[in-house]
Amino acid sequence: MGWVEQPYTHPQYQRHGLASAGLATLRAEHPGLAWHTLGGHFRSSQPFWEAVGADVSGSYQQRGTCPHLTRGR
Image (cartoon, rainbow, N blue to C red; front, side, top):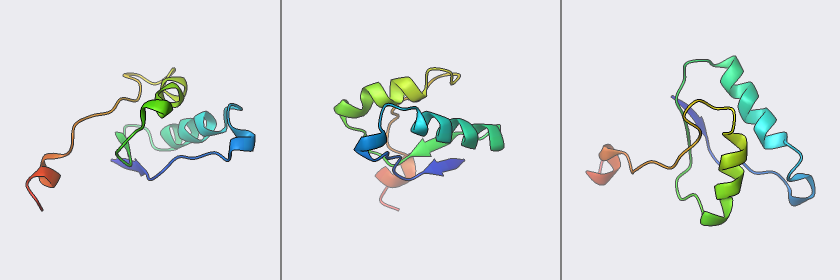
């Protein structure tokens, strides 16, 4: 499993493909990993995830909370 804590681009550089390039590089350098990010994706970030996941098989999508978290471990 690969983990990206909080992908963020300074507003001055947003919409220039930097995050897409960074995530694409991670996927290329570590093929076969399932990638996860910090939870709590905001509705306003949905266009970002759609854009960076455009060429990703299965795209990026929000999933339910991991069972080990809901069991209180």
